[in-house]
Amino acid sequence: MWTDDTTWGGEFAPMEMESVYVPTGLNLFVDIDTTPMLNALIVEGSLIFAPELDPNHHRTFDAHIIFVRNGKMEVGTEEFPYTSKITITMHSDLLDPYLPIYGNKVIGCRYCELDMHGPERIPTWTMMEETAEVGANQITLKQEVDWVVGELIGVASTDYNGRHAEKRTIIAIDKTIPEKPVITMDKPFEYKHYAATEAYGDDTIDMRAEVGLLSRNVKFQGDPETSPMNQYGATIFLHSLGDDSLVARLGFIEMTNVG
Image (cartoon, rainbow, N blue to C red; front, side, top):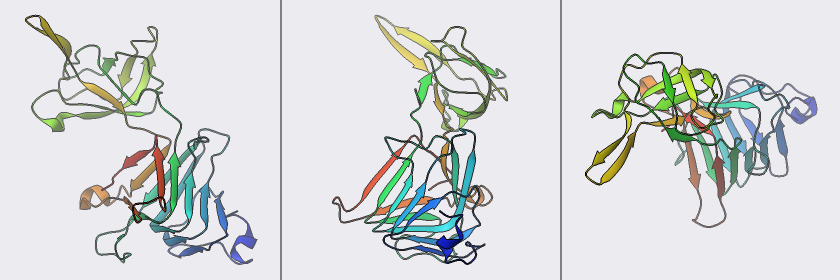
């Protein structure tokens, strides 16, 4: 356990900008809610994050480099996904110290096993039932969703500028008609988002704005303070010989300020 003094030889737990080494044979279970900003975490054993019973419990983990070498990192599994909330934030700038090949602001995975799984969300994206004009703050969807108040959605552009996609936070959902839920958003649209069936002779084309759920309870991100400004985000770097010496499974997680 991270919180056990014996884990650290009876000394202090890691402090700000220190590095941590997890040797072969050691399984480090992260049961602390908030870690200090770590310089580097080298994992040759196992680094395991497990959820709390409270689905709203939020754990944060901050580091410049996580390097898993012949080891394992687990944030939930396919069979037992991470059911509370966790945000793993990577920090660094382009000129900061880095690992050869892998760089910085990175989870580097060399001959390792990496699992990151949130609960399945159904659906992850759908389409709009009706056109939303400029200034609208409600949309009707074409199918039932499990989305909830407080989550972030993205609505695709339907004009000639792809940058007219818009992100909004859900503040209410009316499921009176389950297969056509009505979502109320925190801000009105700045652009029109089209949704209709067009007829061309005997043919029809369904032309509708896609609506995607952006939020997940398992979140991997570059630090929000510098990543957008520097156009330098977090990465996950997987490296092996192209055989089963590396296994990475990522499902139903959110990646923000990456790449």
